[in-house]
Image (cartoon, rainbow, N blue to C red; front, side, top):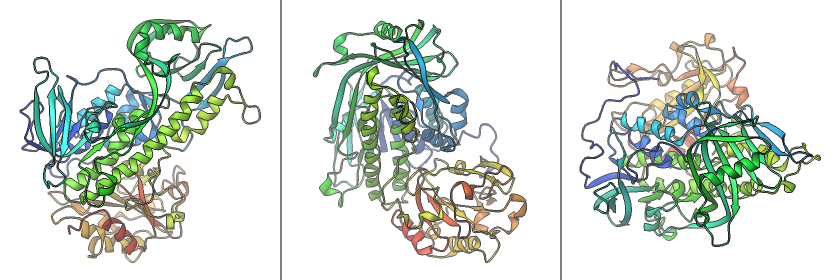
Length: 639
């Protein structure tokens, strides 16, 4: 972590100096803002936390509730989201507070119809990520994003008691084309309205999104017509796997899922309730917490369940729905208009909570969108970049909805449909499908299609473990300057910068005339270099594109002083040297990144990583024109 760049900084390094000119929540509403975010759920807060760090962006976050969330709703954090949390700087905090899901067990009726454990599987496959799958109260995730916001230069906080009720877009207006109608929800102010204008509006306002309705969007899909109950409880039980993630299927009463929660005692139960009629809603049954408890007790028999306290509960219906488009631009106007209104999270896709993907995919939406908005609003990229948001994230959401549709039916199958298959591995169907789906539920199967942001796989063989279009799969390295063992991916922060990871060919130690030094010399000085073309005058050399190198030798075999100047840049107000750009393989621990990620030892390569941690391209070290062309298709010329 670097925090003395522009002078000695005492105190908490996570608290940035406040920037002048930003309003505080509760102050009179402004006439105009750069970005208005509707809703402070995971999607809205993930976006706000990114924008809050940029002093020149004015953001307003409108939330109808009167204060922050305290309990309930989502709880599962996939390994992909944990990798994202690392970029925000609170991955370790979540790991300390949360419960880690290491094993998943499966229970079903035995020969005498009583429950028996029929399978147990490892929850996160070995080597898939350095991060665990964890469970934690959604409210704590909110708290961590809120801390980033309030400690950022803009000191951004939600405007509670304020909801978006309508908006209109003037496509011909160059500045602030979106007129937004806001309504107060606080006691004494109910029904009072205000209007402001925004450059961009992001609808993170849930499945009944007013933002989606205002741009003519609708959710399409189906419902399984089945009610499920969910509750967080403190309870006494003799069920052996109370602190394991467990699927429990009874003979005649259906299924429930046990999800241990943080703190050592709290547990969440998802309980199958009743099938619903074609036009019936769960609310029509008048069911409550006691109905969920009673059904859970019947499923658990012969084990006892004595609920001492219900912390939170809800009853929901399974639905799988997706909106046509994630922005406001009609298909026939894409070539002439850039998006001004975009949707994220439940506003554009809904699904059951059984796969634990809702909060994760919602945050993935706005992690994708955040760097693109920052790039446009700071002048680094043309507004047309925003078209890529709907294209990339709708495809990801479509895959989730299709997966969830199938998985919900596997989970909800009858006992006789979930028999073990002796012809394969002897696992019940639900356990077998669970194992097959682990890469998906870990959040690691998203692969963005070829586009300006995702290059062709022409040179994929140079780094077979860094799939173009998939998330950058981190691996251990040693930082040369201080011999610190660490993960290479952990030097990627949520700061809207691109990253060039230069993997040196065999024998290259960074000296003059070598492949790495020659590439660095071109990047730093040649007018055709993307670093020269897309970095504005007065910005640090790594302000837009951050270059780092990884060598095959052990750290004692390399000379830091012989490294190219680009890998020892002098940045910030004082021109201090950045000592954190050079790494080498961790040979001492036998964790060689070149072997682990299939990097061509003889040729080396360049791996381009987007600001959202996805691999944008893999190129040879000598592919200067291709590297320049990749960035030219995304960023403006500013050098």
